[in-house]
Image (cartoon, rainbow, N blue to C red; front, side, top):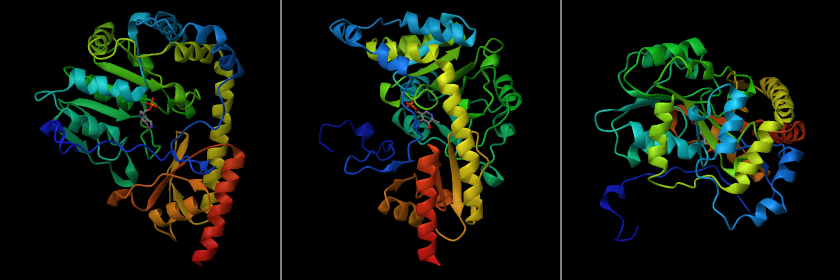
Length: 355
Ligand code: PMP
């Protein structure tokens, strides 16, 4: 730390992204990326013509892409906000809607960025414990009188709550904003987007990083009432008005136009998820039911950190946290069948050595 850093950030603990090692080829099952490349039409859309226009700023209103998303989800362009990854959207949400008087609540075990934003903006925050089996109890958020941020399905557990449970949370906190982070909704979950027209305090956030194979393009979006979108715009135009670059916009439009390709990839991932959980069960693992493109799993014969390290030494990366409540567990991204077979083979090898 330099002597120039503002004192208010001295104790800030920054978010630690999953490893992106450059030293060797790992089977990468640690950051919930898609194992499938973007659709061929996306490669065509990011072409020499688009690149030749990089001397010009992109449309700050992102009209073409917002309209595409609006048509796809049956809403109006005024309901759509775009961000540089959903991480930026979360940042804007915490900045725009939370303060000393408007505290924020989120699950104690969830996406690690939520507490970082709370700490960055020095917000009063309530980390609500999960229940038995890492289950999120919607009643814990009803009438809470705080802004609410919930990942559904939750990360790293993969467990989801129903749309009617979400509706209860939104309905019972009419004077507070509720953000439902649906980063993993397209792997078998049910989106709460249909609620947006009914409630002016609901913001639904999704990403192009998982289902839409565009993590490197950095694009997230939110759908909510025009007034909420206007508030987010105020923050955007006060920080970075050109937050979505030209190439990402072109790629994203082609992505939406090729939804069938991504739906088929999701079907394969869900198939591989069931296959992987089934094989792990035979190896004495406990795996939570998952609606996401990852599973949260625990080996009854080995501590989570030891499994993570043994897998890494064999070229397979999974995610592990030292946090005591989840130290026994690893989060494993569901990749291609070939990747999952390598993962399972390495687990079998490791367990043989433990016996
Ligand atoms: N929300 C959740 C629950 C996530 O797990 C992630 C990614 N790890 C994000 C948001 C951020 O995704 P991105 O910024 O790539 O859109």
